[in-house]
Amino acid sequence: MTDKIVVLTTCGSQKEAQRIARALVESRLAACANVLRSPVQAIYRWKGQVESAKEFMLIIKTSRTRFRALEKKIRQMHSYNVPEIIAVPIASGSRDYLKWLADSVRPARK
Image (cartoon, rainbow, N blue to C red; front, top):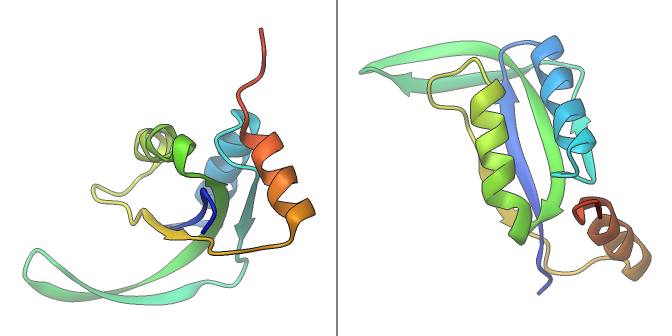
């Protein structure tokens, strides 16, 4: 098991997804964020009703140590009252990729 994770979140627009993705990478909270350009169909329960919406999926690669700050940043920037923020562990991966990921989310030295 590694200390790396994949975080999933959905956004109400492609523009919002791109804005959040860029902010996460620029602030070194994520090494990479993929924005799925085709909307996904979400069917969910909200306030007692079954709803449906088109959303744009973000697939974010980071480390467990950066998760809380990443979650806070997403919540600050997101338009939803309760944004989906789900972390899935990366059990294993290419050594070179995992090293790049770790280097990319390491806070910049001052």
